[in-house]
Image (tube, rainbow, N blue to C red; front, side):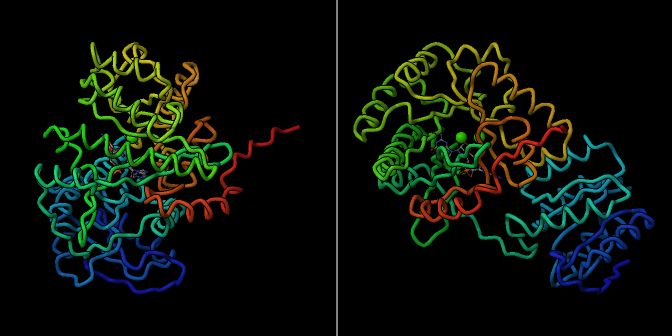
Length: 422
Ligand code: C2E
Ligand code: CA
Ligand code: CA
C-alpha cells in the first residue's frame, strides 16, 4: 500500500503528498492526476491507522495530505484530530463524495485546529480543482513542513505581563486597511504584540484573555493607544493621514474614566477623534447595556468611529446592534476566507453587506488571503479590505517599505467593472 511513485516536473510546488482514501479506485484516480501534475513523491494509505503508521515511519513526512471523509473505523475528521495530536501539521486538502456544506464544515474545523487548508473538493477529484489547490500551496504563507520541531511555549503569567506592560514591552504592529475599489491604503489596525528580548513575540490571543481576567486590560489598552496615536501623529506630520483602528475589550466599557483618558490621549498627540476607529466585538456589543452603552455613546459623540468587530460570530440581531451608534461593520474572517469557492458563504456575506449599506456603515472584510477572495468581495461591493493578501501586521518601521511595494501592485488591485455588452 505504501507505494512511493517518483516523477518530477519542476513547476509543481508539491514535493510529496499522501492520499488517504479507503477506495482503491478513487485513490488510483487521484494518484493519476497528482502524477500528471508533477508531484514528486506520492504515498497512499487505505485507512486512517495506516496513514498514521506511514507518517510515523517516514524520515521526511509528506508536505501535503489529501484526506477522504467517509472511511470505516477512523473517519476523516477523527483522523485530522489524530494528526493534530501527533503534531503532523501538514497542509490539508479535504476530498469527499459528500455535500459541499459538510466538506466546508470539516475545512473550517481543521483550520481552527491550526491546519493550513488548501481546499475542499468533491470526489472524484477534478484535475483543475487539485491544481488550483496546489497553486495555493505556493502562495502566501510558507508551507509549514510537517516535521518542523515545535518551539516549546514559554510560561506566561499575570505578573510577567503586568511588568511587560509597565516596561512598555507590549508593542504595536500595524495592518493596512485598503479601499477595495482603488487599492489605496485608508488606515491601519493597531494589534498588540508582547515582545521579549531573545525570545519569540507572544501573540495577542495568548495574553489578551489573560489581561482581561487579571485586570490588566485597562493599562494595556491605554499603552497600545498611546503608541498608536503617537504613530498616527508621526504619519500625519509626513502627510500620510491614515485612520487608526484600536481594539477595545468589553470590560473596558465599565470604566467611566475611559472616555476622559482617551480624550486626553488624542489631545496630547494632537490627533482628531474622527481619525480613530474603536473596534468592539459583536459578542460584547450585544451584551452592552447601561453604563457601557453610555460610554460608547459618549465616544461617538466626541467623534470617534465605532466598529462592530468579528461580525457574524455573535448571532446578534440588527435590532440589538442598532442601539449602538456604529459607523463600521467588520465581517469576521471566517466568512471571508475562501468565499470565492463557497456559494453559501457568499449569500451570507452579500446580505451583511447589503444591510450595512442601508445603515450607511463602512464595510470591512478582514482575513482576505487570496486574489480570488479579493475580487469576489469587490464584486459584492465591500468598501474596505484587510488581510494577508494585502499586508500582514508589521512594525511601524516596515510600513514605508510596504507602502512602496504596495504602490507597485495598485494597478492589479483596482476594480475593473465588467464591461456590459453593447
Ligand atoms: P482581531 O481584532 O480580529 O484582529 C485581526 C486578527 O486577524 C489579527 O490577529 C491579524 O493578524 C489576523 N489577520 C489579519 N489578516 C489575516 C489573514 O488574512 N488571515 C488570517 N488567518 N489572519 C489574519 P492578531 O494580531 O494575532 O490578533 C488577534 C486578536 O487579538 C485580535 O483579533 C484582537 O481580538 C486581539 N487583540 C490584538 N490587539 C489587541 C488590543 O490591543 N486590545 C484588545 N482588546 N485586543 C487585541
Ligand atoms: Ca479588530
Ligand atoms: Ca476581527
